[in-house]
Length: 122
Image (cartoon, rainbow, N blue to C red; front, side, top):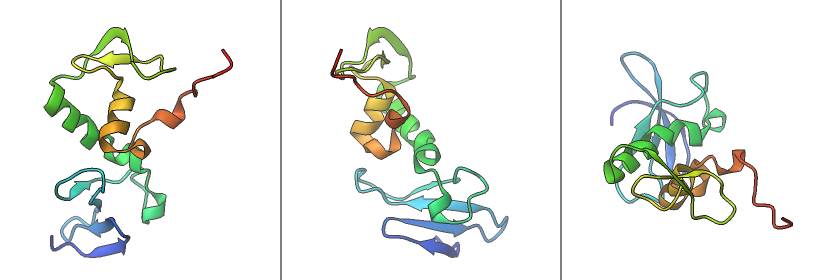
């Protein structure tokens, strides 16, 4: 990749397209074996690595990889098998989309923190 690096971290870089000047996030995730992931950072106004919402930025990549493995992502009527999770399972899986993302790509890329935690007092 010949695009100039704007900012560099251990497993990621913020690069700028030489032609259109648009910023791109280049990531080499530990959890995923393979090459670099290149995606448009979210929010679009981000100009530094610390401003990027990684879960939102990499969500499309995670969903595309799950779809390659499972086919079209459709929810079933059954609930996710994770204890305390009320979301619906994906067709062809035992878990909801968020728990599959957490398991395969890392919890930090799922939206599990945005949903209520399991209440052990019930």
